[in-house]
Structures are given as structure tokens and as C-alpha cells.
Length: 465
Image 1 (tube, rainbow, N blue to C red):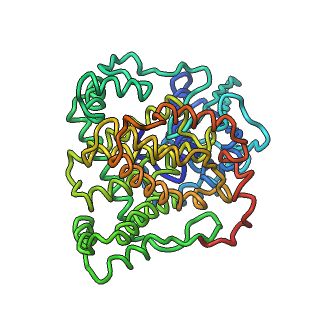
Image 2 (image 1 turned 90 degrees about the horizontal axis):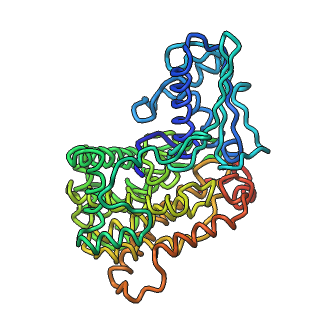
Image 3 (image 1 turned 90 degrees about the vertical axis):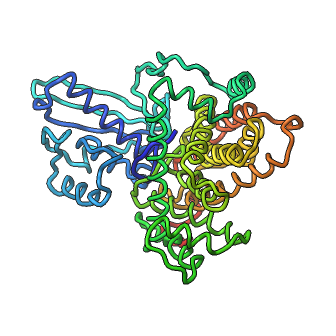
């Protein structure tokens, strides 16, 4: 559920980047890269319609060049892409340089959609001996990719102690063992790696989230893309901090805490944290899919709220939060989707809000069933949320939606903590099923195509909010 990568979209940026990497790896495995002559990329459906705004073409070029989104210096993106465009040359995997013009060799097929998934791309390679290799890949949400004809579930050979596909499965194991959600997840993670590695990996994800929040709260200017959207997190941070001084993340935390615990003050900080992350995401910054880039601000904002205002700034508490959130997200992915191109924004902001609500509830002492109830409440009030980004950019309404998703998560958690799950009328599995049926009924123009909603109501370049 949590992948470190570069914005602005997990399905339209990170996914195509990974697909390009895997295609070149396949090409190298099957043929000698020195024999490569030409490469072409075809983008279909949602990838074509909003690919420019999401930087799909940029991600593909970097992926073909062998760069990795986890480690690539984001400060080099513009210069790297400009060099490819100017020279019309691409060094595939850093090994073989070929003629490559992004303008003509990356085709946006706006009117064509492949049946398996709206986020489809085909890579075409020609070798010196005339042989050709073609692979079609799908970016299925959250940075996950799948090759056409590839069997899903390559890792299912691992025998999990507590196999989980639905919330009912999770509840069964919690009841049978008496363990919390996070404890069940940790046991399952142990099937892949030692606990020490899992904890280290989770804390590295948290470190990336913290750096993203801090960077976003101290970066000013306009977001790229032509909408003239002004970054707001830095100004809000400055206003809320007042005259208090700090020289890094830790002292910044103390400066925030020194401001008190007034409801409005805390509410403003939650919004600030979410704005910061998604402004970074919209600027091709390094973020964590949670479960997607478009919804990357909800979980960091709620986790930062918990850490700062609920005394949760402890490694074990951070790990507990992330493990619980990941399991809820995984259940949504298995039972519905985490791709806006498949399910609208309910699949991204809605899922992230449900993940955060459950995690917060467990961490502040709620029972397993209260955590599940919190997730259900959060999603129930995101059902039907459309994805209609103006200009195909992850800016309007996406950035503000992260603030709303974070606040809804906290509210859902509070409601669940003050409720008795025995009297709940809607289960988490029922709301996941409802979300999926709603997604299937939703018109395609509301599924990350920029063909409907706000995307066709607001003239490009006129809005600053």
C-alpha cells in the first residue's frame, strides 16, 4: 500500500514509470540491448486523456532510461527531460542510446481504450535484425502494474499465517487470536521478512512522509501545469507558527505544540499538513502512495495529527498506525479498487480516509471492531465521489480533497470510538461492495478522464484556488 515515489500520480506517473522499467528489463532479458534500434509507446484511455497533466510521458522516459523513482534526484527531472527532447536521443537503461523523439514516439490515443483497464500502455521495440517486441502494461492503481497475459498474484506462494481477503476474514482472525489488527498484519509480514526489516521499512516510509510534510510547509510559489494555482501550505504554516522559531523538523514539532490545543488551531494544522503533501505531489516531489499519490496527503496528515496532538510520536505507535492502515487499504484493493480511473475519487480519497480512520482508532485505544467501524464510516461518506481534475492535473479539486479526507477520517474515528459496533447497520465489507458497484455504475467521464464535472466547467488558467 505504501510506495515511495515521485508525484503527481501513482497510477499515471509511478505506474507507467515502473512499467517502463519492467519492459526494458524484459527486453534486456530476451534480447541484447545493443541490438535495439527504435522504441515507441502508445498510451490509451485515461493515461492518454490526462497523461500530460500527470506527467505520464515524463515518467515513461525516466523509466526507459533506467532511473528509479525512489532514488532519482527530483531536481534533475526538468533538465533530464529537456535533454532528451533537445537531442532526440534516449539512453535505454543507461546502456544503449537510440534515436527517440518524445513528441512522435509517445502517442496519446485519446479515443482508444483497452478492455482490461483504462490505464493501458503498449511498448513497441524494433531490433537491428528486424525482430519486434511488443508488451502491453496496465497501471492498476497505487503504483501497481500488470502485464497483459501475466498471471496475477506471483507472491501468493508465501503461506500467510492469517490469510485475509475481506474484512470478515480480518475480524475472524482478530477474534480467534485476540490480536489487534496491526498485530495480525505484523504476523503476516513475517512470512516475507524478519520483523526488524518490516519495522525499519515502515519507519523509512514515515521518514519520507515527514520530509514531504516539512518540505511542503516551507515551499512557496505556483504549482506547475498552467492553472496558476498558488501553494498555500507555507503561508498557512507561517501564520499558525506565529513568531516561534525552529531549525528543523523536531524543533518545528515543538513550535507547533507550543501553540496549544484549540480546536480551530488543530483543524488548521491538519489541513496544512495535507495541503503540504499534495502540493509537493503536484510539483513532482517525492511522496508516499497512501494508497495513491492523488490521495497521498490524508494518511500523513492524520498520522502527523496523531503524533503531535495525541502523543503518538513514538516509533512503535507509528508502526502500529501504518500496519493497520495498510491492511484496510489492502482489503479495499482486493474487494473493489484503489484506482480513480476505475472507481472515481472514492477509490482514492475515500480509501485513504478509511485507512487513516481505522489506524487512528486502533492507536488511540479503540477495539478491532471500532477500527473497522471507523473505516466503514469514512468510506460511507465518500461514496460516489468523482474524479474530475481540471486540465488533467492533480491540483483542483484533488489537493483540497485531501484536507477533507483527513478531517473525515478523524471525525469517523471519533464517531466509532463513541459508538457500539454491535448496533452498526453497515459493515465494512458491505460498504466496500457498495463502493465497487457504485464505481461500475459511474460514468467514465467522472473517472480521471477530465471529460466531465469541474474539468469542463472551469476554464484553464482562471482559477487560483
